[in-house]
Image (cartoon, rainbow, N blue to C red; front, top):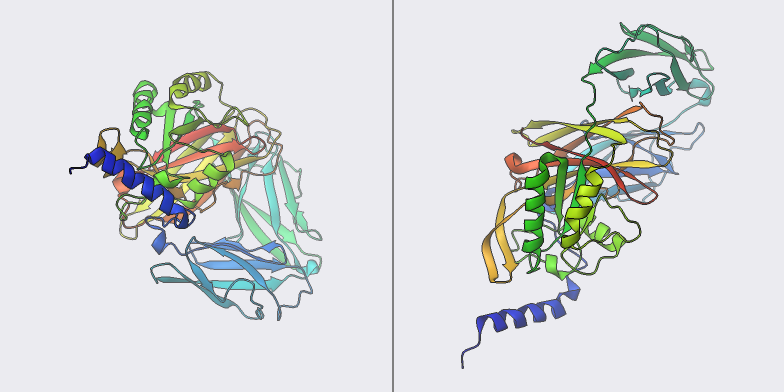
Length: 445
């Protein structure tokens, strides 16, 4: 007796769904097998400063801390391990080497230094900002420099800086004293014990920010979801209509519909699953437009067009830019995300920086059956720092005119095609997760 192929396929998928409970909670992520980074390193609630380029971690502990018996808490990349292990007491009177081992066995070493700072010897600039125009300086503690970024044409000859230094220290020139920043200015921080450290403050200029409202469309999809290709077509039509003002991410997070048909092509990510669980989705295709409408976030694909159009009518409240530098020989991607607050914001803001990849040919279930040569678009590959909810932009409130900058270093996995990858950065309001602005920059323009 012959069995209809479609009935057989349906029965196979049903059996798969019943048997998948032992694997759906532990997805294996394509490319994650080689990830090996320290994401967080803390001792007694003091967060270490991680220099990913130099592979170092530095912790400044309170004066008098006994360095011989400290227990660090360490977070590393998904599937990676670290030795010495997190939670194991160590003697930090000398710098220690921590080795992170990826799933595939490759390793990287970090040099961790802990110092117990004497309050009377502390002499650091903690914050350097200009009152008007509102600019936050970027402090590089290793080089003892502060960089102030202004729009081209800004007069910097008479600006008032607001400076915060270590608790018992003083700074010269003083905070609140107007300065000419046409040339570099040296600020000297003096500790209570009389020792000093110099910081060089420089003004740099960038093209004025052109504020364009862009919209983020998050399409939660799956390779085993037969209705998802139709939703992807909706995304394609909206992209054709709105161009680069609409930025899309196809997120393979959540239920068994995301389990790979071909084990070598796995689009699942820890962040995608975390978002799926947080927003409480239960079926696909489903999506969000700028994550508006809290707590009723999910939208069917038939609703996406109207929501996108409505969001594009809104005035932008901030602007962001993405600048990528890619080294093909080492597959190292350096990303600078800069931004400017256009309208005062009184709530916490966070920045999330993602990698997406286009034109991946692989299997996809469709109403007509399996399409082994389906072209997947806007595939979310993960966040650059491994954090689903990103990093805080700064401390609220945010005055109009305030600028900010975040820098990221990421190694592109060998399976990712650099020419097809792009960085998607967005800023969201923490209270309701609403995305306020989004920008995209290709890895290789």
